[in-house]
Amino acid sequence: MMENDRAIARREFLKNSVLASSGVFVGSRLLTDGTAAVHNETPASDTVALRLRVNGQNYGLRVDPRTSLLDLLREKLDLPGTKKGCNHGQCGACTILVDGRRINSCLALAVIYDGSEITTIEGLAKGDELHPLQSAFVRHEGFQCGYCTPGQICSAIAMLNEVEQGTVSHVTEDVRQKRVALTDTEIRERMSGNICRCGAYPGIVAAIREVSGQPAGTGA
Image 1 (tube, rainbow, N blue to C red):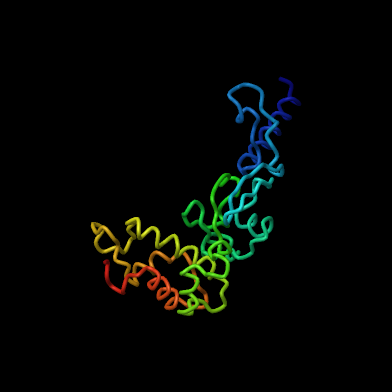
Image 2: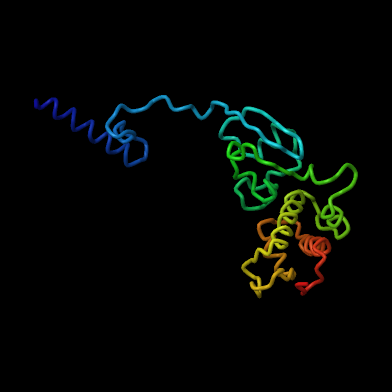
């Protein structure tokens, strides 16, 4: 090898080493098992087909695969009741029900839930008749500014279903019981993923307790 060729090879090696150490360089041979590298991956900006049933209504649309379920609901389906709080899955303001289970919609890619049944705060009432938890939140003043309330209510609905199914929590005293004793501690633990910055927790707990039908401190 000529001296000039060795110098070029050395510079190329050093350049690739620096790029690789910073996470920028990916050699084509790392992408394959010895065959030609594949360069026809679908760009992330392309849209994909998506089918959802939201609040009893069927939707068929195309979305950017990077779209969160939260942004799809608010910006594509005009359902602003689900709130964007921290957008990091830490406050619970964006909680919705997917196939009966509660999730943080800000962390959920919409395309993952193709074909799912979704319920948001807008889908809980039946005409002018509020959902029992909605009415209870009003009676017990389980809100102040109201920003977290949609997520609180959706989370509470799923939480009560979990209790009915016998799902225990970290604070359940007797996991052998057929039905969990829904104490205030249980409610607070199970709702700990939903933050109320106004501090309306006493009203929230009272509303959930009323709808649960369990008096304080009993597991009947």
